[in-house]
Length: 275
Image (tube, rainbow, N blue to C red; front, side, top):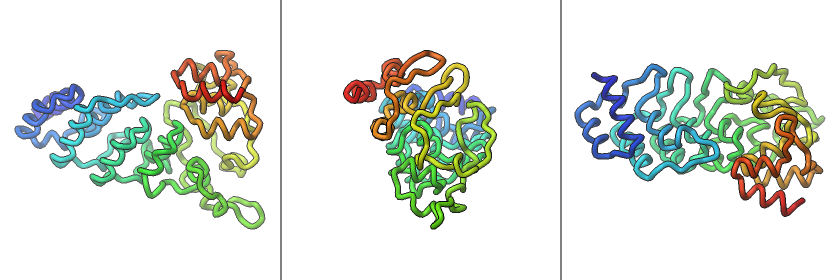
C-alpha cells in the first residue's frame, strides 16, 4: 500500500495537484520516507518533476510543481536523504541550475557537501559548475569542494592554491574524484599539475572528446561555453585568443552554430558581436 501511495503522491506532485497531494500526505504520512526501486523519495521525485527531469538548458517547471515541493518539505520530508547512488534533491537543483529551489532545500537542511555516485567532491555545486552555472555558488555555500577547480570556476582568488615556487598546494587537488557525470566516458586521472590546472596557461583551443561520440568529438571549451550560455567564459576565452571560427569534428560546427542549435540566444548574440 505504501508503494502505491508513493506513486500516487509523486504523480500528484508532478501534475501540481496540491489538493490530491495534501490528501495523500494526511492519510499516509509514511509516504515521506518511502522509496522507489532506485531509492528515490517523494521529495526527490517532486524536485525532479519541478526541474522538468533535470532539464538542460534550464526549464522552470510550474508554480504548482514548486508548491508541491514546498508542501512536501513542510510535511517533514528530510532533504538530506539520498537515493541508491547518493544523489540528493539538492544535486537535482544544482545540476539543473534552479537557484531558488536550491535555496529552499538548503534552508530546510539539505547538506551542500553530499557526494553522489561515491565520487569525492561530487557535490551539487560540482554538478552546477560542470554545466556552466557559476551563479549557483551564491546559494550552495560554503563552497564544496574547496579546490582550485571550484575556486577558478567561481572567479575567486587562486593564490592560496599556488605555493611560493609555483607548485600546487595539496588543497588544489582535494575533492577531485568527481570530474563529470557518470554517463560521460571514463577518464583516467593522474592529478598531475597540468591536469589539475584550470586556466593558468591552458590552451584555449585545446581539443577534447569529452562527452563521447554523439557530443564532444574534437570540440573545444568555447563550444561548451556557447552551448550553456556561459557568457563570461566566452569573453574570457576570446580575450585569451580562442578561435571563434573553430569547428568540432562531429558536426563540423562553430561555437556560434552550437549556440544557435541549443537555443542559447544570448551566447549567439555575443559571438556575433565579437566576431
